Image (cartoon, rainbow, N blue to C red):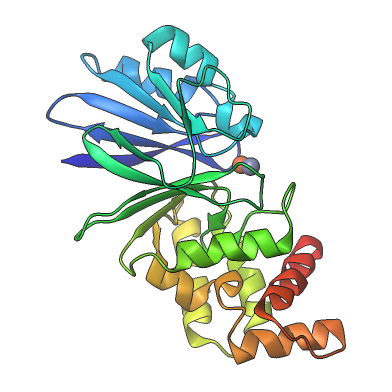
Length: 259
Ligand code: ZN
Ligand code: FE
């Protein structure tokens, strides 16, 4: 039995802590800060941090790695294509890795950064996805290194995962993403309903994650660039007919950057 909890860090990051309750072993995804993990380990004597799982090289995802590695000796897994501190295992697209007894498949998802990877656990009942800053709840990461075409291809791969896949992304951006989603698809009732639901959750201080692939396909404009409604809005923004879903993606990503 693996339990997954969010350890908040900085203003809006989540470090995902995977816990094997029977063995008292845990793993953390993208520890941009060591302190929340250290505090958790102090509050849970007898537990061991076995693995540090990294999606990409940004400081808010790797800032705590060196300290946690020094303190615990945990194995550091990260993308082969990026400079990751203390990395023990360099991962590429299609690689398989086992963490806390869970098998993960590595998916290379360039766009936010060029080497960015996601980790997918293909369970029939409870599939899991750790996708860093690539797919967000109702949004996607900024294009710091990659092209719109690369990010569109990466998101299309994630969108093709099973409906029930739980999506664990690295930031609490959901509400502002949904505000944008409402602007892109004002007539989409599911987007509106999700906006109202997440508004209530955030007023109560509740986390909006994990999401699911099904929910993202229904409400995330960046996964919906082939829909007529999204294309129409992109055409209006552009002042001309857009031909490909890729160009629709590029248009709404640019729009979001200034939204
Ligand atoms: Zn990032
Ligand atoms: Fe980030």
